[in-house]
Image 1 (cartoon, one colour):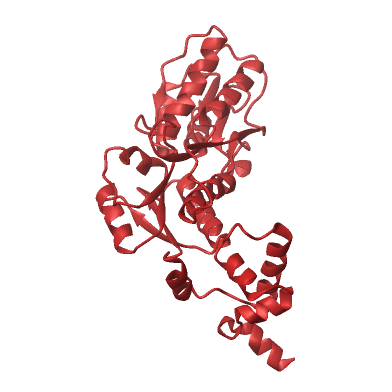
Image 2 (cartoon, one colour; image 1 turned 135 degrees about the horizontal axis):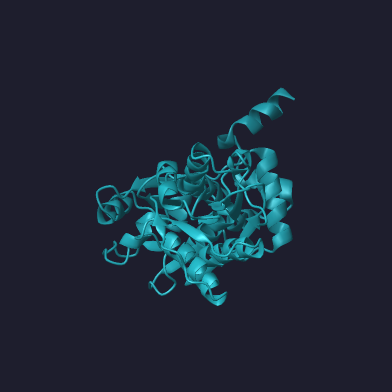
Length: 333
């Protein structure tokens, strides 16, 4: 019906009362759902949310801010978006925030994380997530009073809420798999020395070799880029098995090995980390450790927003599991 279509196409014409009528609940219940109150049972919440979708209802952010004293906006602090992991985390964080009714504002720490915090304070965000490389800068920086933080990839003893993948566990799984395939040792193409994720992956590799009674070969260090992986091949001429700290460096390594006439996996087995969308289309398709970026972002966003809304305190530390994905870049000796 024309009238019905117009009503659904404009969220300004849909009121809480209309949602309440459709869901068969009171206006107060709709208000509680809109404001994220825990005082609504799951079945009722689902019914209200279904009615909102059917009617095209969208909460008015400014009015909601007046009621709750919150801006319904969280910040995301990054140093770079050039890495695949950071780009995927940006998308996953934006989606997770939207699911909770929050907007996301992005700031870079190119001029220092203190300035990034100041910019977020000026925008009156309710809290912020600090991503990966920027996390190392947080401990030494004074942040604005009342700015709630969740930091992705930081030590659990850092003194603030943190979320990270099981980097060490994933590295251990990669190293164990290469040893199971009959390799006498596993070389490591590591990430930057100032990266928490890189150091945890290096730790998992070292501890696994030590547990097997194997002395760790010298680390070859890259900067997460495919170019650095390509350059690293010159230092890995004796390797028959390489665990790369990310898929981008593994990509460069694969090309360099091919250029040198070394076959993967017949001469060298390679395992990466991340499971980027293109990893299955590398030549050969890359065996890798999968990070669940969606789960990581959802965990960070939930921890932050639950603290903002008083549902619970931000969790001190949360660890998201990883998974070995076997493809064609590894084989037995």
